[in-house]
Amino acid sequence: MTNRETEVAQLQRTNRELFDRDILNLLNGQMMYEEFKSKKLMGEADYAPFNEAMCVHATTSTIFDTAFIQTRASGHHVSEESYSNTVIKPLSSLFNKRYNYIVLWFGEDMFCQMNLLTLLAYIERSNYGGKVFLNSFRDDDFKVNQMELTLGNYSSVYEDVLVSHVNPSQELMPVMYQAVKLFLDMQSENNVVTQFILKNKQLSQSELLKRLFTVFPMIGYGDTQYIELIEKAK
Image (tube, rainbow, N blue to C red):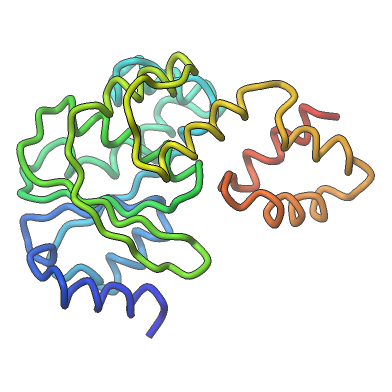
């Protein structure tokens, strides 16, 4: 059994109600979605991936509408159709079906937490009446920490952090607080990653990427985000 399968089996023993048909599991990305769906890790529940990187590029106050799609597609340099096929269509069950429970599976790094914040803000605004659980984990060991979340503040935190790039006035859970701090630091031209790139610009791109992944695990960027910063710094 993989780490993930072992952890999920343990969760099933402690919280069986989350392994049923009226549950939607929202997963951080396509790879995780494919593994969970193909192995039916959460039994007969539904699965959907969030294939975004909300930690980079501009966003809009409204979430998942036409203006959001236009703004996000433009930031990622893809067509609106391509963006909709990658990000919006896979979330159709979130938009169209009613669930008693929504379970969000997101890592503790900044990349995952900004995606999580976006989904929580959307769920809150949709007046969802069921229960929301967060299964958070670190990518290295996949030890899952499960908690039930109370909706109420995520919409305004999304607005402050991802739209306006300012500190939120609301109190946040510690992991999200750290991620928000990192996200806001990364908005500065002279952020820690850019400084590191400039100090090591003699390295090849592949070597530099390797080091960036090692030195900044809590940022959670992928190749695409780091390459953008490398090219900007040159």
